[in-house]
Image (tube, rainbow, N blue to C red; front, side):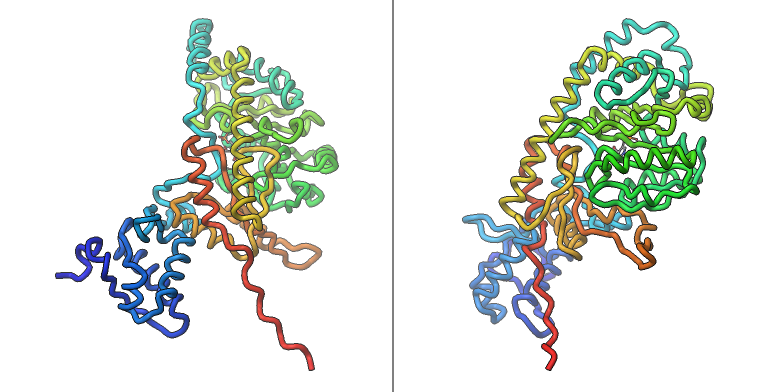
Length: 487
Ligand SMILES: Cc1ncc(COP(=O)(O)O)c(C=O)c1O
C-alpha cells in the first residue's frame, strides 16, 4: 500500500519527512512541511503530529518543531486552534494565471476578496432601482423603443447635466454630454477620434492602457508623486493625457491645484486634450469633494464618468462631457444607431437621479466605505503598525506601503491565506521602469498592496482584514551586515 494513502488518519502520530541539506534544522523542517503541503501530500485540514512525537521521530528538539509550526501558522500554511492541535490551513491553492503574468500569486477561488474594483454587489439598491424602472417605463415616450440615438437619451443627459454641475463642479450643457457604456467605451471612442500618442500616469489601470493600444494609441508614462501626475513632463507631441485628478489611481492623492492649472495651460498652448477619468470622485471622506478639472476649461478637458463605482459595473452606463468641437465626431464614431447601452436603462438612471435616489445611495455608500476604511486603518494600527496606509481620503481602495522588496512575497502570502489582493507593481506602466530622471535611470516602483475595501460583504470583511494582516511582512527585514570598519 502507498504509505501516503489515508495519511489524514495516520498523521496523528506519524509523519515521515526527509530533512535534506545542512544548516538550520527549523528552516529545513519548514521547507519539508511547505513542500508536503504544496505537493498535496498533506491535504487542507490534515492534523499534524504533536510536537513531541514529530521531534522524536526526526531527532529534533521539541522547541524546534514548535517554532517551525508557529512560523508556518504565521505564514498561513498551517492553522492552530485551541484544543485541536495544528492543522494544514484550509485555503485555496494559488494558481498561475493565464492573462495576468504580473500576478502569478492570483488565487483560484479566493475565500477573501480585497482586489480593488467594484462595490459590494449585495448592496445594489434593488428596490429603488425597480421603482425608477417602473416610473421610467411608464413615462417613456414611444421613441424610446426605437433604434436609439447614439448621443444618448435626452432625459439622462439633462439629469446628469444638473447632477455633475452640483456635485463635481462640471460645466456640462446636456448637448455636451454623450452617453456611453462606461469609461472604457469612452476611451475607445476618444482613441478613434483624437488619435495618439497619449501620455498616461505611470500608475494606472493596465486595462485602459491596453485598450488604448489596441485602438492604435500608445501611451507614454508620466511620473506620479505625492501631488499626483507630473504634468510638467507633458510635451507638444502628446495628443492627450489620461489623468485621474480627484484620486490618483491607484496611489490615491488628488492632483495638486497648481498642476491642475498647469495641465490646462499645457492643453491651451498645444491643442492637447486632457482626459479626466472621474471614476470615484463622489467618494471623498476627509473634506469637500475635489471638483473636476473639467470645470476649469470645458473646451480642453473631457470628463469621463460612469456608475461602475457608485452603483454597479454591470449596468454599463457612462458619460463623456466633451468640448464642443468633439461632440459631433464622437457621436459619429459611435455609429448611426445606439448599439451600446439600453435606452430603458438610461431612462431608469435619469429617474434615479431626478428622484434623489442616486444621492441617497451615494451618501449611504460613502458612509459605508468610510467605515470600512476606518476598520482597515484600525486593524493595521493594531496588528501591523509599521505598515503605512495611504490614499485614504477618498475612493474605494487604499495603498499599504511595504518595505522595499517585500511586495511579491506579501501577495504570495496573501494567496496562501486565500486572500486575493494586488500589488502596486501590477498597475505600473511597463515603460515606467525605463524612465530616466535628470539623465539617470530611475525605477519608480514602490512596494505596496492595493487594498479594495468595498467589495466584501459586511460579514466577510473582518475575516478578509484578518487574512490581510497575516499576509504582511514582519516589522522590518534584518539589517544588512555592515562592512568592517576601515583600519
Ligand atoms: C481607474 C478606473 N477608471 C474607470 C473605471 C470605470 O470603468 P467603466 O466605467 O468602464 O466600468 C474603473 C473601474 O471601475 C477604474 O478603476
